[in-house]
Image (cartoon, rainbow, N blue to C red; front, side, top):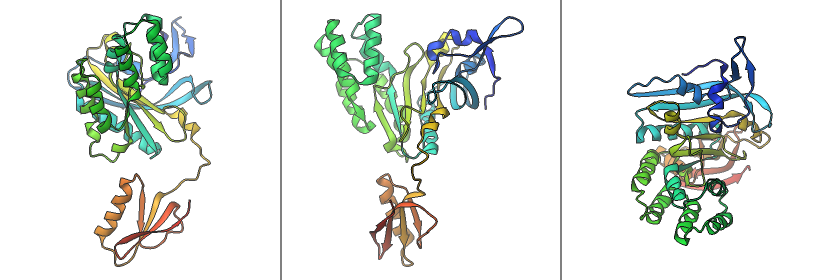
Length: 346
C-alpha cells in the first residue's frame, strides 16, 4: 500500500496539469517561501518516488485528494482509490489491472460496463490525416463525442482523402463485444500495419474469456486519453444511474518517460465523489431471481437452473422455501425438474 502526505511541491502539478482530472489546485506558500499544493492526484507522487529498478511493483492506495469535485463543481476533500503497476509490464500485467478494474466496478454496482480502447491504434489513424494542431484537437473532441458530421466537415476542410476520412469514422463507429469488434478491426485496418497493436489489445482482454465479467467488456475507440501522457490500452468504467465514468485508467509510459523514469506503467483510479450521484432512492434487491426448489430437486438441477439465469446476466438466490426478508425482482420455482415463473415482486 502506498501512503503519502497531504502536500507536494506545486511544481510537480504545474508541469503536468493536463494529466490531472481538474487543473484547479489549492496552493499555499510554505514558511521557507516554497509554493506548495494540497495533493490533487496520487499517481504523480508515486512516479516521483519510484526507483528505476528491474521487476515489477504493484501498488494500491486509498488517499484523500483535494480538487474540484465533478459532482459539486467546488473544491472538496475526496477519497480516491487506485491501483498502479510499474516496471516490466506485459500483457498479463495489463490484463490483471483490467480485471481489478472490473472487480472494483462490480463492488460498486453489478450493473456496470468497462469500456476499453487502444490509444496507439487511434493515434496512428489520426496521424494519417495529417491535421494541423487546432484541427487535430477539434477532431479528437469529435471522436470523444462520436460526432461523425463534424469529423466529415474537418476532413473536408483539410483536404483529407475520402478513404482516410472513412477509416476514422468507421473506427469510432465500431463498438461492442470483443469477439465481434476484433475481427472487424483487423479487416478495417488491414492496410495500416497495426496487427501488433490489435494483438496487444486482444491479449490484454483475453483474461476475461472465461470470466463472469465477459459480457461487461466493450471495445470502443471513442474512449480517449491525453496522447501526451498515455499510450496503449486505456479504459473507463461506467455504472448505471451515474452520468460519466466513475473509473479511468490506462498505460502511461509516456508520462513515466516525461518524468525521467525508464519503466512502463499501467493503473487506474476510482473517483469516489462520482458515487454521490448514485440514486439512493431506487429500490435495492438481494438478487434478480429468487429460485424456490422443492425437496425432490437434485443439486445438479438447481445448479443448472442457476447457470441458465446467470447466462442471462441475472443473479440468483436459491432457497428451499420463500424468504420473506429477501427482496428479489422475480420469483421462480423448480419442481419436477422444471423451472416456472411464480410471480413478480418488481
